[in-house]
Image: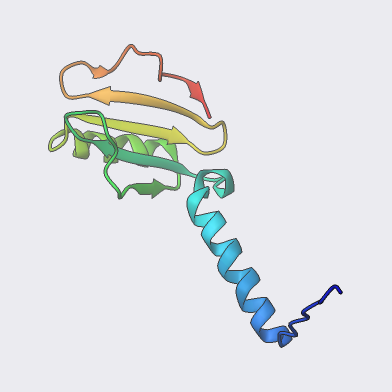
Length: 105
């Protein structure tokens, strides 16, 4: 004998579940949903990104913010959200010549 258990959830509960699941996915893949502006992230001495960053409306503002961050942090990444390309900068040489320059994500 097969027993089929049917659970009936109110529609509001289903909507909350879908919203939470979608919110979790978007949070984990935020770069896939950002199509405007320029992101600026500071990196620590190991090259790891800090958990915070800035989004600027244009490249000029982002490069100014990059200069400010390089006074405090060893490296900074500037990412153009339209082209998905990023450039790394360091305190020593300003722009790094690495494989990450012009890296398309």
